[in-house]
Image (cartoon, rainbow over all chains, first blue to last red; front, side, top):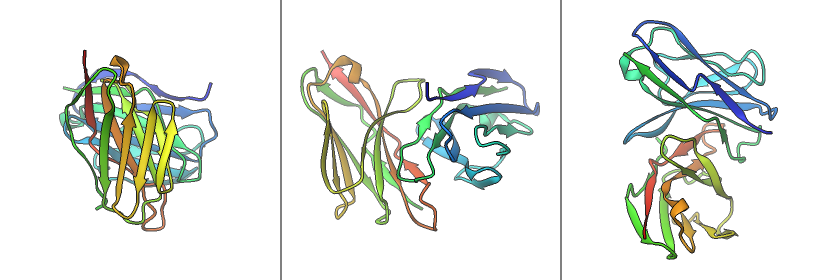
Length: 113
Length: 114
């Protein structure tokens, strides 16, 4: 089954404790992206990757890091999480053709205390 | 800054009626247009994609695109309780050499009147 898998689905943690949210896709997609979704603000792009070792900032990259060492994986790293990073996070992927729709993972709800 | 605008709603329609959802976008170079449905706390799910002017029908859903007016809409016929969700309009631009930038509207909440 074609899918984008995120882990963990839920996480409650404390300020300053480094965390990683993993994202993996099995569709051999070149393009992967991370979004956060907050009430009243909609989906906002954090980082994206157009292929292995190629990443770039989205609209709200501050406080986040990403890496793309393998085509299927695109982890999101919060080096020193803060309460304003409490949000619902989605990973998405699509084929190299930018006109194709993005497929979303099930989401990760992060709470930073 | 590319923008995608949607009425936040809630839009309330009677069961069995036609729901009409609208979206405008600012980037004239946009090439691809998508409608996603999102239930509360769940991930966005693709409903329709449209790439050229006119109508595209898929079951109870019809997407309409007018690039001259920078307007895209989604019609849902025979609305059902399961259609109650937030509908996200997304537009793929082609500016700055990248055609991977997908910009989302904030979504329209659709609810059914029984």
